[in-house]
Image 1 (cartoon, rainbow, N blue to C red):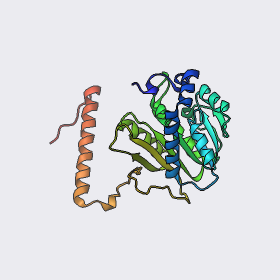
Image 2: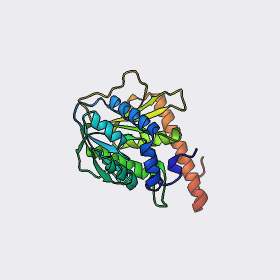
Image 3: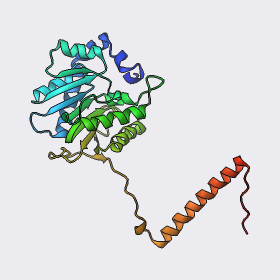
Image 4: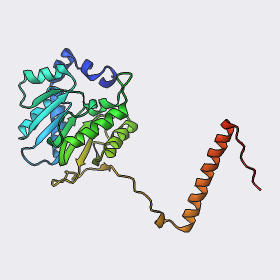
Length: 263
């Protein structure tokens, strides 16, 4: 079966028929509820938080947020999905918006954010001018801004492969988030679930990671030259000189310049 994101853009794929089918499926309702509750468990939120639901669809995850005592705002690119949410009279506020164009809320609007089965869509180039990496970066930059200091995020998603998973994780790291990926049921291809769990700055409430393995987002640590041994210093300089020599040789090949002979 083809993945939905490779069939058509989300605003087209989730048309009136597909949206109704998705919303009324008891299987989908059960899975969405299960994943939303898992996301909230990982976030370990205090009571009565103001939560952003990214890719809220027809409000299946929003209904769980309401049951758990949170207020919420949902955004989705599919007008048909949002129409179903309105018909169900969900209690959250709804907005038609493309997450790849940024989170359209002022800074510090939300205590937390969740996203269920949505952010993998950002990795697709649905139009000729769409740049997945740029859309991912803009998404995480504006998401970070929309959260209060210490705000937390949990995005359940379905990466196509390890490269796509790493691309998403790297974009989150580059925009300032800390955290990592939690993998539930790692030994089961059918039931495996990925949760990107993030914090925007220092949080008073710790993320709940009891009993889970987490692939942590780590920032590169710069190596101090003071920590180098003399041998490491010499080897580093030799490598640098070799690279420079290759660059000069490449230049002379295309510009006609001759390198000085060695004596």
